[in-house]
Amino acid sequence: MSSCSFSNRCNHTAGHYKIGNSYTINGITYHPKYCSCYEEVGIASWYGIEDHGTITANGEVFNRHLISAAHKTLPLPCFVRVTNLENGRKLVIRVNDRGPFVEGRIIDLSEKAAQVLGLHKSGLAKVKVEYLRKRSEQLIQNTPHYKRQYEKEMQKRHPKQNNAESKGYVAFFVNAQVAKSAASKLRNQGIENVRLLFKNDQYCVKVS
Image (cartoon, rainbow, N blue to C red; front, side, top):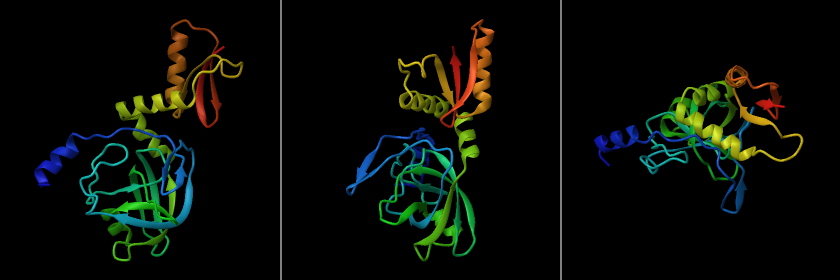
């Protein structure tokens, strides 16, 4: 693939926000999910030239020369902080792919990320991975098509039900300011009994 065609492909493949359904690889089932916090210590590996130019799990084009990573269950895209526990180096990385599917490994880094963290030559290193919730939420809220896709994911995972507890819920949000804005708009339209609640790690707008 020429550098020109690869560049054009990257420019036209913006990718999308996804959590995704459960999936099975090599007999092991993984369950992607929205999370409010995540921290894990384990082994990191890296992938490069063999996947350069392929499509990632969220529809972007993988570029081994850019800083990115793959994780088995975190929302895509999101940000994590990876600390190489063997040399102390730290790096904030954008996760946009699924993997690694090797026992004991918790994250697969792009070749560039592996170089920055100092594990390019060894291939493997013990790391700590921390989910950066605030930065990940800002990415979603500041990218219109991610925001629309996120809201669809939340509606799919939290459908309206005909029981007393769920009746009246209008929407679910990660960001408090967005939830307050939605509640204010409903009140300004003359709708009464609009309440803002925090439920299951989300902000809920409810009309009772």
